[in-house]
Amino acid sequence: MTVTEDEPEPLTDSTISTKPKYECLEDLPGVGPATSKKLQEMGFHTIESLATATARELEPAGISEKKALDVIRLARGSITLSFTRADELLKQRQTISRLTTGSAILDNLLGGGLETQTITEFYGEYGSGKSQLCHQLCVDVQLPVEQGGLNGAALYIDTENTFRTERLVSMAEHLNLNPEQVARNVIVADAYTSDHQVFLLENSDKIIKQNNIRLIVVDSLTSHFRSEYIGRETLAVRQQKLNKHMHKLIRLARAFNAVAVVTNQVMAKPDVFFGDAVHPIGGHVVAHTSHTRVYLRESARGPVRIARLVSSPYLPDGEGIFKITINGIEEVEEGESKGRR
Image (cartoon, rainbow, N blue to C red; front, side, top):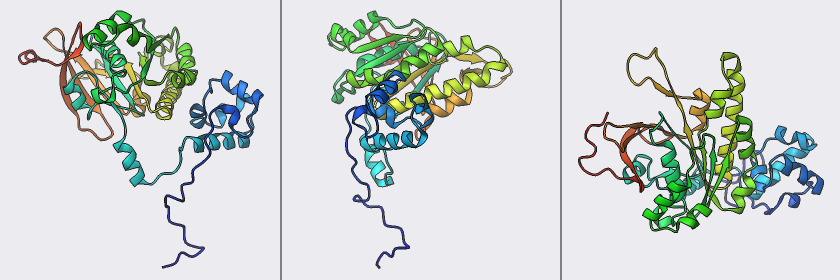
């Protein structure tokens, strides 16, 4: 059967054209030195960050909507963000990288580890192990692929002054890694306000590209937002700002094939009489944007922690246990799991 002019052309490999590759902003047609400088001042330092931008976000650079759409289209074509058949997506899914947590049980709960190009949210009460787990991931990401790592570095945005280099050292020594080299491959940025937190992430694309960042951590995501936006009258503004912040994070994770991790605080709901009254901050905005959500809580046995997979696009809910020691995240030995709550 021949294809007539009125019939749509079948989507084949040849239909998906290969666009030219651009290395820097000024390589893009229509982007001169002056426009490139303005874009970089706005936080767009790489082709990857520009490819995931919206036309409205480029308005402050003095670019018309039509030109902005053309520039974004060229940037997207350069990094092969285009229409893709589902069978091709299936092949891509098979090659998605995963990062180990340091615990086989926790990795199994997460389908083999933390996925690149997605946001994994760990939430729980104070002392549940959120920051400890983030420190462990900063070390694990530097491991070879065959050991569960990604052969890359980590970017750690610290909003609560919880980052400690000493923990990296103890975890690195346990894995027989050079502590100084491990510390060199973790870039830390202290965020002092919610605006500063947003600014750091929006201007991180150049740092990510230059340092082979494969893990982006925001610890914690909601701390500043929770303290600065108080009262119902500020809720809408807070949620809009938080929504934009998380979408920027997922854009970076996808553009650079990195693992994105956020920690989240919790609040108690006194009107809940049955079940767990602890709920994460951020409401539906955080819930919809986080691809995988894990609830961490303490057990009755000291270092043992319980992780419950609350939400995932394709994994079933479940629980797993691990423990936090001077060495980092470790497996729970037989007998230590007794007394869970």
